[in-house]
Image (cartoon, rainbow over all chains, first blue to last red; front, side):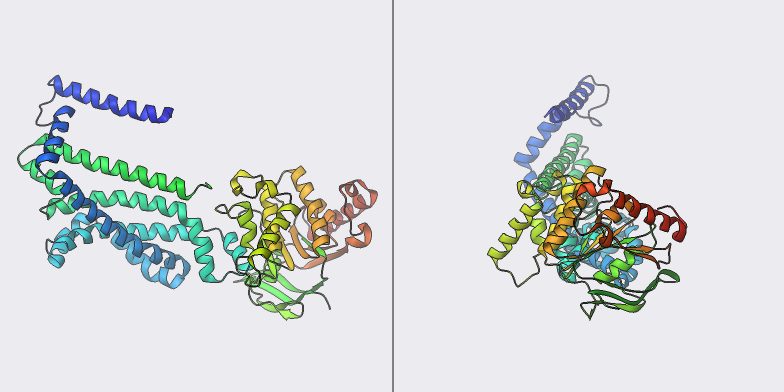
Length: 246
Length: 256
C-alpha cells in the first residue's frame, strides 16, 4: 500500500515539475508543452480525431503479431532444447537473425509485402519471435533434471513429462518472458507505423510532427505509455493468479 | 549370486572416464542397503542404473530376475533437492505418484492419499504448497509420493543431506520404521557414516572413483532390525561406526 502511494506521489511530482517548468516559460512550448496542454490535445484527439480507433488498430496489430510469435516460439523453443538436432539446426540461424535490427529490414519487408497490414505484422513478428524462441529454449534447458526423473520413475512418458512437468515448471518464467516481449512489440509497432501506415498511433504521432503539433505528439506517446502500463499490470495480476504457489 | 536386485558385472563409464568398475552384487528384498563412499565416487551412478536413469556400459542389472531397461514406477527416486513439485500442494504431490496408474479408482486413490498423509504426519498440510512447509516435510512428501506410486524399490540419493541435525535424525528413525512396515527395498546413498550405520541392514562401502566395492558390512547382524534413536548411544553402535571409519581411512585413503 505504501509502495503504491509512493509510486503515485513520485509520478505526480514529476508531472507537477514539468507543468511548472513549462508555465515558467523556461522552455519554448513547441518543444515542451505543459501537461495540461497535452491533456487538452488528448481530449480533442479522442473526441474529434478518432484516436480510439487508431489505438484499436495499433493494439490489434501488436496482439496478432505477438500471438503469432508466441504460438510459434513456445513449441519451437521447447523442441530446440529437447532435441539436440533441432537445436543445432536452428540456434545459429536464429542467433544471426536476432541481431539484425528491425528497421534495417523495413525496405525488404515493403518489397516483399507492400505497405499493407502484412508488412507491419511481419516486422513486429520479426522483432519478437527470434528473441522469444531463445528465451523459451533457455527456460526449457533449466528444468531441473530431478523433476524430470521423478516423473519418469512414477511412470510418465516423454509427452507427459513435457506437459505435466516441464511446462508447469516453465509457466512463471514463460509468462514473464511473454510480458517482456510484448513490450518490445510496441517499440517495433511505432517504427512500422511511421514508415508505412495510414492508421495507428505511430501514424498519428508522425502526422502531428509534420505540423509541429507537439502537444499531440506527446499525447500519442502518453497513450502508448498508458497502454503499456495497463497491459503490464494485467499480466502481472494474471501471473499472481496463476502461480499462487510462488 | 542371488538377490532381488542384482548387479551382474555392471560397469559404467562416461566417455573416457570410468565411473563404476565391474561390479557384481545381490541385494535382498525388503532390506535397507546403504551405498557409502566418498563424494563423487560413482555410488550414485550405480544406484541410478537400478532406476533405469543411466544405462550400464557393460553388464546389466536385474530386478526380480528381470533386466532393467528403462525407468518405471517399480523403482522410485527421492532426491536431495527439487524433491517435491512446487506447483502442487502436498496432497497433489502425493497424488502425482499415482497419476499414471490406470489400475486405481478414484476412491482407492483418495484412500491412499489420506493413508500416506497420516503415515507421514502431513494431514494438516495437505493443501499447503511446498514453499510453505519445512525441508523435512518436503522430503516426507517425496517419500510418500514414491510409496503412493507403488514403488517396490526406493532409490534415495542423499535425501537428508540438506536437513538440520535434529530433523535428519527424526527422518532417519521414520524411514527405518516405514521400511519395515511397508516392506520396501531401499538403496540409500550417503557419505555420512553415522547415518549409514544407523539406517542400514547392510553397508556397501565403495572406493574412490571409479567405484569398486571395498567392504560389505552386515549391520543387521550386529544391531538387529529395530533402530530406536537410543541405539546411537550403545557400545555396539560405536564399535561399528569406528570399524566403518577405519575401513574408509584404510581402504579408500580419504576421510569422508
